[in-house]
Length: 137
Image (cartoon, rainbow, N blue to C red; front, side, top):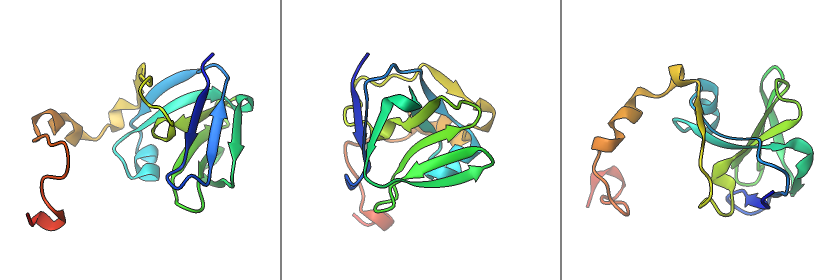
């Protein structure tokens, strides 16, 4: 078992787990897209009882039996849990303190995948912002 740790953007909420990782996946469903304002969400699945939280977490029931947790101070999305997997919590991989070892082993709900992701390989690549917001240099 690996010790995993993470936090929200502002650091008001932290989490840790020494439990086994049950899944590493990327979800392309429309609900995840809307909940995170991102084209997909990467999750680390962990046993719910193996995760320790510090700080206040606000919960939102995004659909019946589905709850999403976030930091009330900065708004960072922290996890997804569902009655479909009552013993698991799916923590957003982007909250990991060290993301270097994260490797998703599955992509799910590909029918709802954002089509524009297919064009990313053809887009210009830059180490930083190459233009100021609004197109000014």
